Image (cartoon, rainbow, N blue to C red; front, side, top):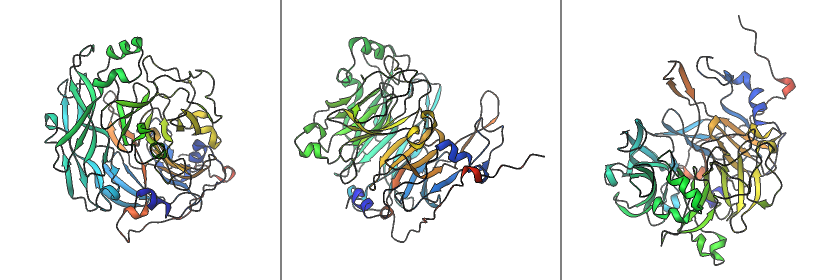
Length: 476
């Protein structure tokens, strides 16, 4: 039974509730918020965290997994209750599908150990940065049942952003490789590499991005910009997914072989598929798109040819059995990226795009305007994610603000949650305390993924009407 099949058995049906813009819904729930002192954050000092709205009859009911600023992988229900926790040394835990894991429930990928990268030894151009030394698979009880790191090139995994278990029991790991590349201005490049690692933690296959640079669609002038980039992290690949079964391949399109791997390069504004057998790029979207206006809103009519994507995250083929199966779903951050830098609307927001990967057409999209707000009311210029749900809703991680929500196809928000687990730190210049609740990636988790008998709640959370919101009492 696949995760998709498990999802389809869960309760929930498409529908809608009264529309509110994301920012307005937060404001009218301020009385239930958490107080952060004005010296801690430049954002509003009183605002809600946890579940701020929830219609169990219209949301798709499930768990949600994410790692927060407290370096804990949290599994919550849609009421925000903590269901389970795993220690995570980094910030991107990922569930493991039981169908490729021997039927084992409740297993996750996490980072087990970090190490310091000094200067160009591990991370070029940075004096001090933490990198992953060991990654691993934890069972429901937190026991390490698989790990990778000591047998990695250089003795450290240097994994970043993504990983996935394969049907053959191996694991694909997205990692960094620091090495000189001929023709680059940087003496050492922070390259992106994919390792296939067996259960013994040994690398049995690898793919190095710089060896395929002429397959990424750059013109000679663009390639010159890439090679002369001021940063060693010239591609910044932030996503790696197994293509998975799909109707394109079933109809004879070999580019979409289920064993192939899909990735996106944030800094270079393209998405591509690697042929697992040859290592060649066999499908690509970008880096060239129809130009966007800097002053006017992006078009919203669909279907239409794909227009300017920039700094994207979490691209993947929607799995079989879900609405839109076979299409590409991607969180288009609309951040600054590209060679040369892409022109994006100055006052625009982010977008979630569903794309026909054969016609290269946008067939559905979500923006802040679809929920009744301005475009910039939905905006995350870095991190973030989006996943299709069995009832047609889309799960969205607006990572920059630590906001997770479900949106119906018509734009109605039927569940919303604001991350209450902040990373507390100190500003190096001023010494002020800082708080950051951003979320790299949240992901929906079916009820059947956990051991039987695990409790959860499905209680409605109804936000008050704007006219019924209660003002805060005056200060002393």
